Amino acid sequence: MLIGTWNLENLYRPGGPFGPGDKAAYETKLAALAEVITELDPTLLGVQEVGEPEALRDLVGMLDGDWHTALSRHADGRGIRVGFLSRTPFEVLHDTNGFPAKLRPVQADDKGLEVAEAGRGFLAVEAAAEGGPLRAAVCHLKSKLLSYPGGRFQPRDEGERARFGAYALYRRAAEAASLRALADELLDGDGRERDVVVLGDLNDEVQAATTQILLGPPGSELGTPAFDRPDGGDAVRLWNVAPKIPAEQRFSRVSSGRRELIDHLLLSRRLVGRVTAAGTGSLRQGVAGSDHAPVWVRVG
Image (cartoon, rainbow, N blue to C red):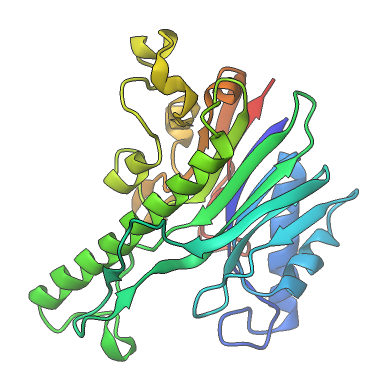
């Protein structure tokens, strides 16, 4: 089976402030998205930046065969949310944006605004698969893109830039900790026997502290000798499949001319042991579709 994640970039119907300017541009976008999904042919695809449920239905209507979909009820301020498309039926297990009980609210601006929930919800499902039930959680963590009071995207000075960079990092770290708490529920201390995947737009790269929070106990990574030596941490670990992606494909977005892998798939021990291939889809900057490439893993 092929499992993937893809940020669809502002999937709205035309006419609003965030979607395409007209029907022709919308149809071009849908066609570009549908072409990529058809080529990937995923069993389960986690998606981000779905602005309108109707737009997702329009996209699914352009795909062959039967698809099952679900969207989180927890959208951000401009209405984007995460969801799943699946070839097989699934059950929604969790749809949450809350921080875990012991994690206090984090500062979000100079006035002391505190945030106690993720900006976008985490959606977890259990899908039927040939090897047994597959549990999956999709996310879209806080962006590194900074915004300032009054809708500004430029700081008044370097002090403001540094502070708001810290606020964004606080939020992304708190969201990562919240997502890890959800992963713990899905793993249920039994990752050696359960197929679990956490996927989505983490808005940071493999070695970022916020990404590392999600992995669980250190000491075993793909490509290291420790991976082949089972230990007590395997039951609760998640493994990032990034090392399985060919080096020339190991990016999902281009920012300021730099290639970044900010979209990730993290797998439980039972699942990562059956990986046969991983990769990214083509990223076509400046054309209809998305400014992200899909990231995928194939499991035997």
